[in-house]
Length: 126
Image (cartoon, rainbow, N blue to C red):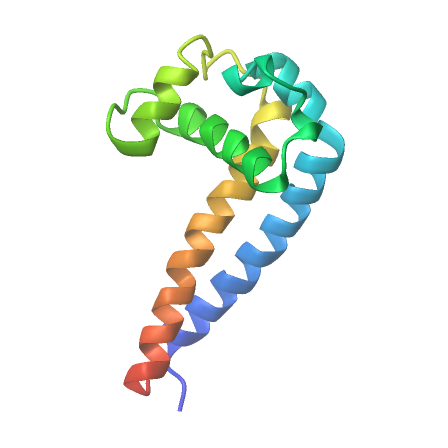
């Protein structure tokens, strides 16, 4: 039947989905203006945030996530985000602006891992 690992992975996946949904609604519908005013992504010098397509808006928020969570990293996309947002001090960014970004992208990445574990467990027949 089903193993405890599968039950835990499924529960984690559902929790990540709920967290991502709530954080995403708050992030994109209520807090985006405040976050962009405080963190000032370089893309916003070209046009306002809401004139970009949703994929670019999400990429801007992903850059904010990388800068806030991994400020000292210098490789790959994380390093690029740190170069673009070098003016942002993660320790001085208010928690009211951090939690929707970290909740949205953190639950996306953790949910992706949980989904892969679920697929592996289903494939192995556990």
